[in-house]
Length: 441
Image (tube, one colour):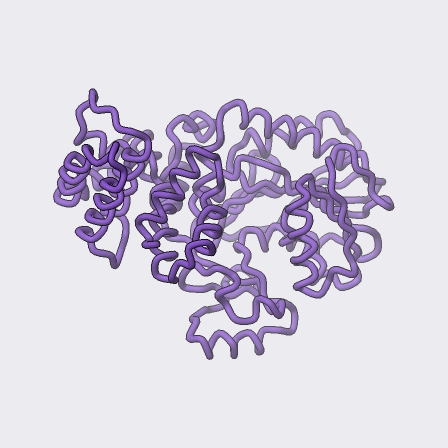
């Protein structure tokens, strides 16, 4: 199956069945035995579509009569083609257009739209870059949002969280390419560097975090030598920085509780950096819990972890934790550039529900702690509603708790107003995160 056809099938599945695009791509590639270049093209086209969907819709819409109603699959082909023409590098625009037309014509009911698609895409090929430039230079916040791939409906949440100059900085940062970073397992640096050199994979050391290597493109973990052997973990630097806070404050004695462990990436880092630590991982999703167990086994630290599947609001730890890590479910707005699909699934009710859940989880975390224990609250959100507002409300209800200062002074960090700290996605290896450390007195 060719990459263009695969991308359109994935987008159709994503819309009609709610399947995550990455999952759909993996299954399709395995079933159809797709070749690596086609997988790469399909992945790029889907990512381009998802990252700035509203912008492509706006540009393409200028070439279509308002009365023209296109079937969903045809419309997706048009929008994907628009994004591909304006953003895809090292691929012929003519080949892309012809591939899209070929796919549309395969469906007899859609074949009649081939002429329209052809005309619109060729006009975009000729003059679409001028429209793109207007959005890039737009003084209006709505235009800047579409240029950055930020859903326009979320602008009120952004404006409540950041001043206009800061928003301009954030939106500009969201336009940059995302590259992979690797957290190297302790003592494995020399072995890993030799493997990377043998495969001509280029990297350099992070200037923010020791033990982290920056790659010059995006990779799937299995495509890098040393992954199965546990020599490294593909992890954004923002995630590494957030989890590294544990090492600075954990006393090295009692239990660490990871309340929402996900696939175990931060738990693996914590165990590797704190060699005497024991961790208990709670995860609502059974599938993610299994993945976390596999991740800890890959890193050779599974024997120091207890895995529990269930609701973090009702589960009970085996013993009182000395340190609780709460990587709370959130809007993921700090990772939209790297994982754009989540932003199109977000709604106002979901955003409000996240904030309510975050407050409940943080309050539960504090009830589990004794005096002198710590709770590290983390989100990959840049919305004040999910961050400072949550901390403010919970601290107001718990006068026996106090926020601890986090001493990060680089340009990549920003003090919350007034609680916590933001990690800003200002380079290709950083995703946006928020961290606040609370101690129970």
